[in-house]
Image 1 (cartoon, rainbow, N blue to C red):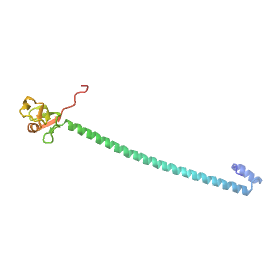
Image 2: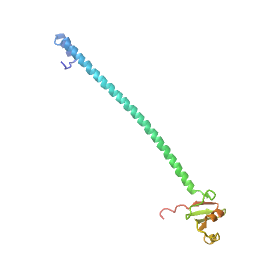
Image 3: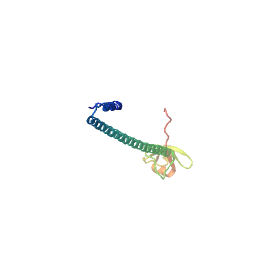
Image 4: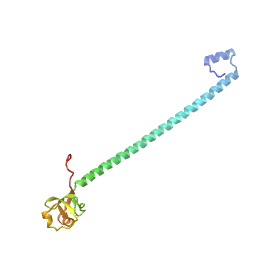
Length: 157
């Protein structure tokens, strides 16, 4: 007999002798087996939920760590961009380095600024006075103290 009876019906049948001890024992054993299986399934489900919660927490912590690393890298990149912009805007001492050959730069001595191109062409230094847009590296070193790249042209031009 595998059908389960309500408690009151079970008691009624036992009192009437319609249910013997063997049948009752079998029913109780079957019930205990089902309860044990349900308990095991419930414990496994609780364990899975616990593992999922731990995994979720671990993933959240991992996500937080990666987000922190991303924000730190983003901040560092912004700082480097600002530093690069500042370097582009600063006057570079001739003692530090010379501009690339063939690139127009703004050169400055103690009293004036001029746009010029440093050239590797051999020209006499007096020719700079008649053609100030070109000068040799040696002339540039001797007469200018600072230089900087020309700014970008205005947008739309």
